[in-house]
Image (cartoon, rainbow, N blue to C red; front, top):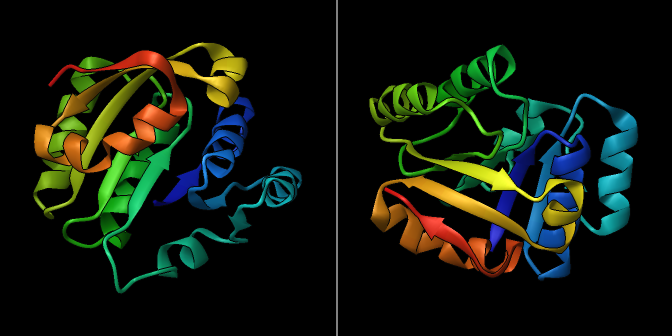
Amino acid sequence: MKIKIIGLGKMGLNLVNNLVSHQHEVACFDINETAREEAKEFGAVAATTLEELFAMNQDETSIYWLMLPSGPITEEMIKTCRDNLKANDILIDGGNSKFADSIHHYHFLKEKEIHFLDVGTSGGMSGARDGACMMVGGDKVIFDSIEELFKDLCVANGYLYCG
């Protein structure tokens, strides 16, 4: 599966490593050049700008995973994504945002026919790398279409679709 990760901090970088090791095609972006270089060492394609990341594979539905701290940074990135993603793209927020914020993001993105999943992630850096536990919210049909990602990212029976 192809996936684009935005945010290569401790969790995001380990998430990239985990996805690449499970044979997913990963493109990513972070403002930190060192993090981008490390992601490339894992086998990911690292964009030097967000615009470059958004331009990749425009002819197909894209999956984006935000791994940013909850709050203003995530809020601004979701606005940026809304302006750059196309209908039927999927945006996942894996940064443990507040429940009320996730509901707002769902409706905000739905106005442009962008699908949204929120993911509560547990397990820290080692979980992101070797198997996390995740609670997933959003539309079931979208979850079902990418469930393979959660199977690969989590420990056995370590994810739950919560609606």
